[in-house]
Length: 285
Picture (cartoon, rainbow, N blue to C red):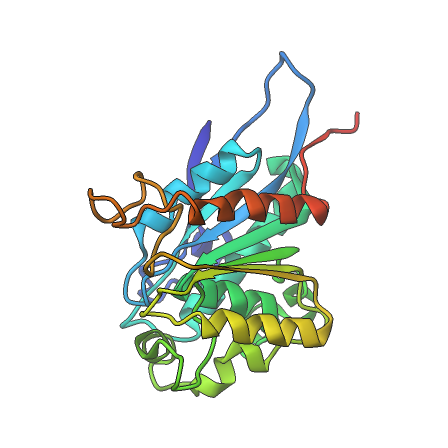
């Protein structure tokens, strides 16, 4: 395994300006002389934490799970409160553009780069999947380059989606906006359009932190727009399940972050991606 950390500000020759995030940790396979040269799809992992922290449980373990499935995985360390919009969005945009620009060197399939987000990280994943031409991104990278920020598929895990006060996770929107933008302008179900990439969504009925209505609203908007989408609402499970395993659980007892049933989301997501062309392939000579 090749593990390296990329300073995205340094790569793009942009002033950091005090931003604490903006680092991308790569988990790559490399090549072996024993087998044919492989070109792999990539997965950008965006952990949650209410834009107040970046969860370790939703970062490296998730990257390694997709690595085990044949992906080269890249975990984003992004800025959180008291840093606000557009900092997080710019960092996610930089991560996607880095993968696009370096795809050939990294031996990635540059047309099959997906992103998976969790909770508030899923909101950030949604921002680059739905609002890839946001004014801040266009100002930083130009309109044409912003088209490359949009992932080729997006996975949403118990996502923060809506600014509707009936269902929102208020803290995430407060921390994201910092009072500089309106929550309704980043209420993603209101911004869906037909050019959004294929989306896989999962949540649980028992989630009291980010109600499943967030996922339902997103799926409904995607379906109406004709965007390929798949939705799974599992009956049991609290918020923040990550891989639903003992490795990512927050407790040691049964049910404290462990769910063998909800854990099927990973296999279901991999099948969804495979149906949309994500697969390891032999490199051309």
